[in-house]
Image 1 (cartoon, rainbow, N blue to C red):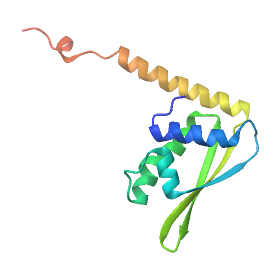
Image 2: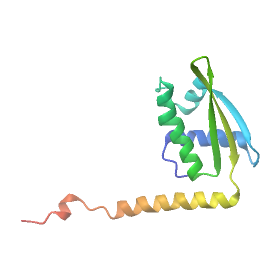
Image 3: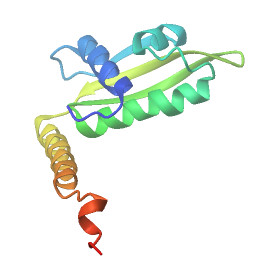
Length: 127
């Protein structure tokens, strides 16, 4: 898995366990505090910060690099955010292959960047 976000890795494991081996759409609702606890993201006190740095980053990575497609809706009680409902389904095999290729290309690109790295001392001519 080429997920860069630690929240993405945990959310993938969590939602994949609810999905099982089925290709059907599955919905799962979590309370906001419960989800923060499961993702180990209690440091985000404000919901907009949690949404931006943990939830959106995780969902984007999962949809791009894994065999799952997820989307979510936020539930509110009054003016307070109280929960998150996920809709999850497993991508068909042909879409999985594309996600796997994308992840491999990303990994190859980062390896090439690391291999082609030249330190400053090597590029400065001796005087």
